[in-house]
Image (cartoon, rainbow over all chains, first blue to last red; front, top):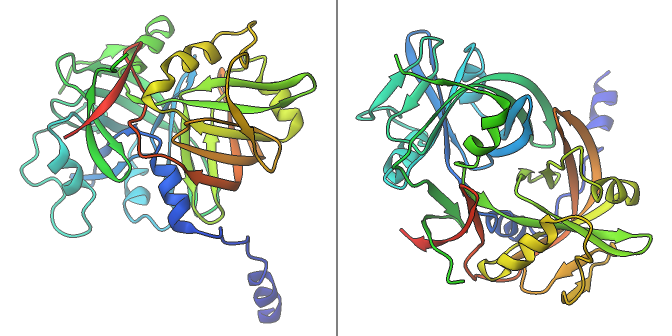
Length: 176
Length: 163
């Protein structure tokens, strides 16, 4: 039995030649910053993702993100019926770092709103999506999580925070 | 408690346009030459193995040809490729006329001045409502440029500034 397991372990996928270059190439796609939060056992639980993508589907409205298989936050977060997605605004750089920190209270000092379904939102975000998990698909060292949008709220005056090339950026008009 | 508007399909596209992200052109080789389409819904998925996702619309006429070829290349667009993005978002035109590109090892067009290109083999495809979720296994990629990226936000093009 152990021998079988060991031989199965040898069946690895090849590691990309240069993980650094892979990260660099992936990072050149600019993206909004999404805080995914919910109340679990009376406490807010949350994580930040930069792999968030809309336009998966408009009818039904589906969005997706990828989460590392080693994530400790996702197993807690997914136990909530609803998950709040806050697309962070350009004033939320500190909040983004705090919500993704490994140590300390991720929610200390943040202005939060709770929905009746248990979703937690960061106030003054660019866009709020109240979501339910539709599917989880294993994909390498991550899983792809598809969420269905149940309700929305627009932050009309908030410009979104952008993550690009491992830095926070702000929206600007094109020269053209 | 917070107030939320109920989602209607008609409003959904406009509402989700408030999510700002970059733009890509997904390219490949069809029976009659190079083909491609503009795709906003790109996402990196896994590092080991290296996987990315794109979400082509079920109404796309280009994606079924790329699916049949089993390979495609994702080109991340710089701010200066604004017109190219619009051109590749329209169907029924000769998208590659006047477009400069080289050809990847998998045979896919790499657009000149792309910020980065990611050459993929189709890994799996999953149901995603009126779109599909296509996973690409990365076979080669290169970060080419530190130019400013092209962004799409509320139906218009934008770029970034240092914050």
